[in-house]
Length: 239
Ligand SMILES: Nc1ncnc2c1ncn2[C@@H]1O[C@H](COP(=O)(O)OP(=O)(O)OP(=O)(O)O)[C@@H](O)[C@H]1O
Image (tube, rainbow, N blue to C red; front, side, top):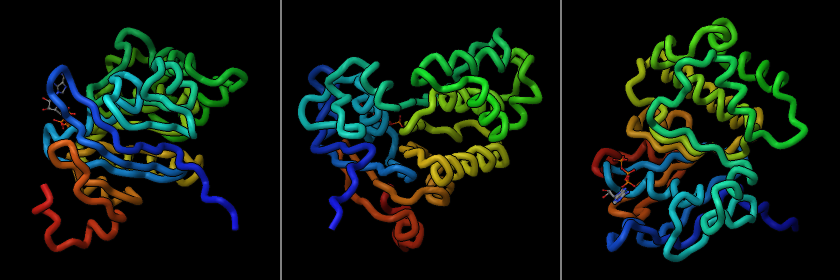
């Protein structure tokens, strides 16, 4: 029998905090290639702290974080980037005075050597045609939803293998959220991208996710398939 494939992201017994405050009390989570996993929980549960630790932006106190087998939590952030991790923060993040095209090119700066920026740009244009149509426009003149597409496009220019997304739907109209979430599902299916999705909009997150974790007070209190979680009669009591 073949050995089971190594998870793309493998977090074990992770504890982390700030100063004397301990936030994560030993969490385990996993994301496989081609999988969308949503990490849910009330405000302050520790979701953002968990993804900071994955990136190497916050040193854990104990436990391990591996991306394709490589320890990223106790290494400079460039180790996570080299392992194919891209993070998209919840705030809109674009260079407003630069054109959409130039924003995307800056995203390519983290691409593995040998990857072709023009080919990647064309792929991002196929995912979000509006970015191609408005390539020469300053990114700051786009709508909030379009700017979120630019941020996502910048991350995709680096050819990531694991995408960490903090609240991608925040402040966006439902139709835009649908477009972005549909694109995420397609990226997972077609490019085998692994996605860890932090999202307050739990209903929508569970529509596209394969699996879900619920966090409470720095602990994972439940792990299920997204479908099992959607069908739970006590779903809203979890939060
Ligand atoms: N830089 C920091 N210094 C001190 N405490 C922090 C810091 N960042 C977060 N915390 C605290 O850690 C706890 C977990 O915060 P975290 O941002 O990880 O939660 P979250 O689940 O992502 O919530 P939200 O959805 O509100 O972002 C909170 O009590 C928060 O006040």
